[in-house]
Image (cartoon, rainbow, N blue to C red; front, side):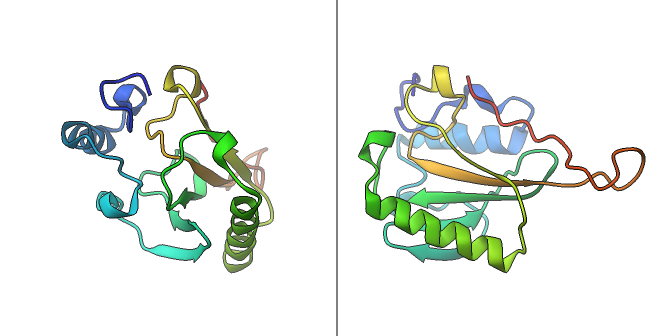
Amino acid sequence: MTSKNSFVDGTYTAGKPEYSNVIKEILSRGVCPFCPENFSWHKKPLLGEDGNWIVTENSWPYKNARYHFLLICTVHKTDVAELTIEDFVSLHNLVSGVRERFEISGGALTLRFGDSRFTGATVAHLHFHLIVPSLFKSGKKKGRARPVWFPVG
């Protein structure tokens, strides 16, 4: 993160007033919003946990996402190099469970890490996004996925 607070960066909240206000509050408190002791800004229930990971729906999903889940490490990690084999096993288990529960046949699993000037992330604490796009309901593109913009950089 490039802000004074190494936990969050408000640069990438434009056009999302509620989320922007939440990030400003987190900045003022100087805490990591994804560490378990600070996980109070998140509005959605937990859907599962495995090892040091939890899965939940994103409180502020991206436009055109039918589903937008967050897989969040319960241990404060900020770099992909900190991930272990056990982390990947837990992630596999959680993603498999969510796919089965929500009957997901396709989507994207993404991770940002490092300096937010390069990643576009608002939260430094490692977390994966599992994004399933919504479908066009009519016209030539009926049944095709709507694009979901996941910014990097």
